[in-house]
Length: 458
Image 1 (cartoon, rainbow, N blue to C red):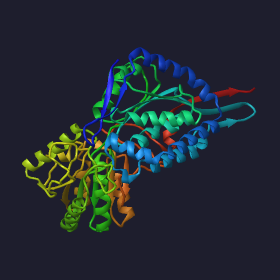
Image 2 (image 1 turned 90 degrees about the horizontal axis):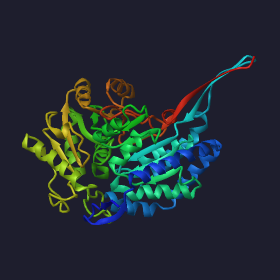
Image 3 (image 1 turned 180 degrees about the vertical axis):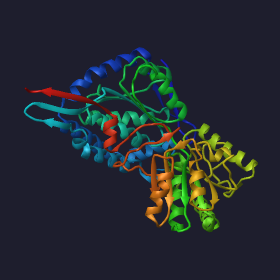
Image 4 (image 1 turned 90 degrees about the vertical axis):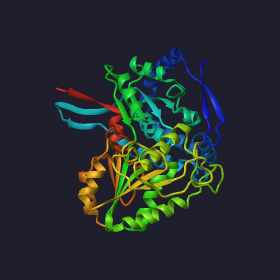
């Protein structure tokens, strides 16, 4: 039996080992889940909502355990307390709008005809979840999928295998049948087989561009919908009228929180030339104030990156940029040995879009800052990316922010905030960020299909 070792980024030790489900067992499990889905969908909507809300309550009882386990699995400091706040916000909101979002669209109900469009579940939803926000990203699809009447097969990232187990435990304890909310440990070939052999009906994938391409290749010719959220190279733009201190604090937190491992984290900052020097000075001071160290230590504000290969990529981008003329402003911190998972939060200036650090997804604690001369140059540079997830505009003029936002190639436009997912708004992207519609009422539309009824009465 093949196994997976989860290597903790804290010290490189094996945190846990799990057996990988073989192909035949996975196909059998998927068939069982498909058979169980019809009974789940037949339950009243309110019962499904109540089960999901109960699972949310159960997860909320274990936040201390959650924070510690996340520190061991992917390195986030325990001081941040896990992910229950955002997790619960999303579950609660989606439960609250479910009745309206899933209600039939009544076209006519006369003496002659009844015409309507219902939203019906796809069947089995395969959720392939990432490690960086392992509870919140998974629940984005799990909660609305179950509420809408789908069954869920959850394949979590190998860096956060324990999260998949905890989620399955919570939902099953809340009364969701095991076959309806199933956690599995799969390799890439078996995942591909489940899709290619049509053992699932919808795929929700969050991860890398390469991973999203693999999902779409597996689904080619099956007509199985594939929703993808593939990260980004998200920009922030600080206009001349911005609140400078607020912009520095929020954008730098957006760049460095979770050791920069956020799909909607800030990776590029463009600052009006009038504020550029002051912004850069304050940004460097912000980075120098961070405490890089063991995430189990309450004083640590920044833990290790989740895996050594991610740290190597960030260091390579920084080294290449410096070799090409960029300036690094933060000296190596004591916890950073220059080779391991602990990476100093770095601020780069003198960067250009010829450098990978301003083009490729870094997904780590580094940000490049460039001066710009007005909105037109900022928009051009913000759009000069193959990704399009979020963009942040800093200004005191809401109308100008919206006008700039209309010109940006992105899924979400923020004004005076960043690195946040609002469950009432559609979480989506464009270009190499992929295509999908998570949360909001559109999330329910994505996780269901329309079914039309044309009923002649006389």
